[in-house]
Amino acid sequence: MKESVICISIVICIIFGNYKIQNYIEQSINTIFEELKELKEEMLKENKDIDDEKVKEQAEQVWKKWENRHDKLAYFIEHNELEKVETSLIELQSYIDTKEYNDSISQLDKAVFLLNHIQDKYALNLENIF
Image (cartoon, rainbow, N blue to C red):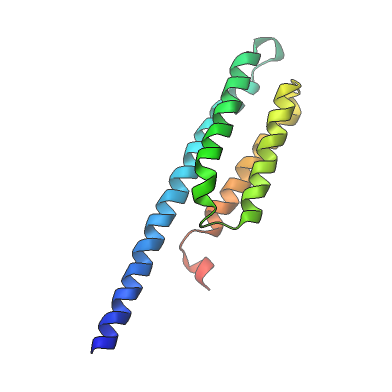
């Protein structure tokens, strides 16, 4: 009887921990998604209407939010996955610095895809369990 109570307690702790981790991952990715969405909207304006300073500022905000979340995400997510997102964000920043907005939009879309992939890969669902 004692062993079954301990086993059930461990399983409950694992499920609760996974739930908390999933919420943190989802919250982190959604925060970065919102920033990237705003940045993309600004870059999709016609060339003469794009506010270069605003785009740079938004890109820096995305990077700061990523840096704030990166360390904690590294506890739960493969470093390879995080490095891909980080590389994409660095390339995005360099394209913005050179005002190559078409290339920066493709890098932004790549970062969004990678973040979606991370969110799907670490979601607790039957597809990932089996």
